[in-house]
Image (tube, rainbow, N blue to C red; front, side, top):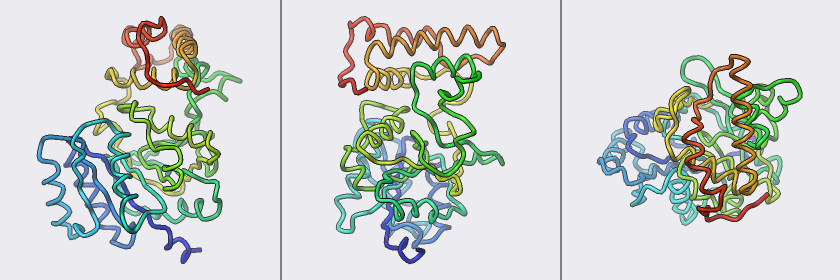
Length: 321
């Protein structure tokens, strides 16, 4: 099996936006793994405008990995999904095409990571299209990188709490922290079969940031592929270091826009309304239970969602239940 795994060509793709210091630390951790670890690394700069391209090229040369680390300028900041699509297109145009695309957040580190158990899923089962790895927080703890699809019911659970039978609708649950098929995996460390990526058309670039990996996994499953979680392979993820979106802090507008796009795309306008109502009801139940308040703010959510619910503003996507 080990010999067969060496035949899988893996290209890692990292999107940078004004986070050259973090990406430089990630490149340092990659360099410590050795050149045979992955076939190539592609860093995509989303028009940072701060000299990131030159800085990262110099960093790769300094580390002695400039021969297999490519730093590309996307020329625009179309968001996380668009940057990944740009990097994937470059990888797939190469003479030596990858078998697997590994999408890595810029705020990750890969010291000590052994990819074999993740890659074995692709070798064993031709139906496996995506594999997500486990995530450590860099402080001795770990986060579950496997989740259930968000639904209107899960919005009630998110704010009201996972009570009794409702637990089966919770998006995040420690019961999912085991190897095997799941609904979706974190985009912080996501491996994808190149043929799967090409079949479903990559990331939906209508999501600027957040929800894009949920949509990606959902579309892959609809196309007949399996999504698998492999927590025995663990990557350090310093969550929020690049986006600034952290637990308990107000969310930026693009988070609300991505949430809106997800619910309209997969549940329609009435599904978005149901999700918002469920969120509000859950918020009241959560307050009665003295549960911590959700970082999502009602005023921001309705400012973003009401025009679409009332049909005054179109979301340029087809509903796909």
